[in-house]
Amino acid sequence: MKKELLMIALCVGMVACGNGNAKNESEAEKQMKKDVVEVLYFHGKQRCATCMAIEKNTKDLLETTFSNQLKTGEVVFKSVDITEEETLADKYEVSWSSLIIVDYDKNGKEDAANLTEFAFGNARNNPDNFKKGVEEQINTMLNN
Image (tube, rainbow, N blue to C red; front, top):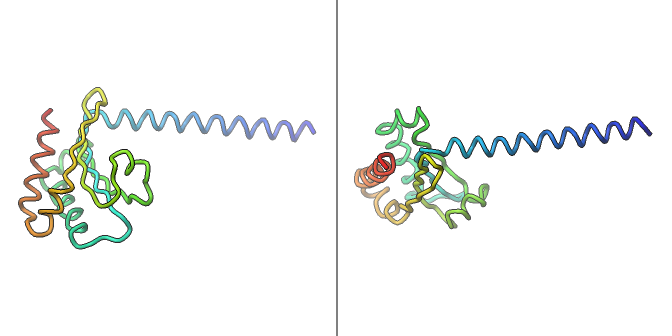
C-alpha cells in the first residue's frame, strides 16, 4: 500500500513539474515574439494554384530580400494548416487561405495586416507586384 501511494505521489509530482515547463515555454514564446515581424500563410489541406503561388512567392521574397532578417529571427515565416492549428486561425478570424503579416513591437503589442485580398489578386498573375506589396508591408513594420 505504501509503495502504491509513493508511486502515485511521484506521478503527481512529475506531472506538476511538466506543467511548469509548459508555462515557461509559453513565456519564452511570448519573449520571442517581441520586436519581430511574423508572416503567416494560412491554408487548408487542398490548395488551388493561386494558394500555392501565394506561399511560393512569399517564401521566395523572404529568402531573397529578407534573408538576413530570417536568420536573425527579426522576420519569421510560418505556413499554417488551418485544420491543424484552429486556435491560431480563430485568432485572426481565418477560415480559408489567407496571408496575414503581424508586427510585434518591443512591448509585445501586436499589429496585424491582412493581405489576403491583395495576395489573391496578384500572387499568381502578377508575382512581381505581389512581392513588391508584401515587401513594402514588411519594411513598414520593420521600421516601426
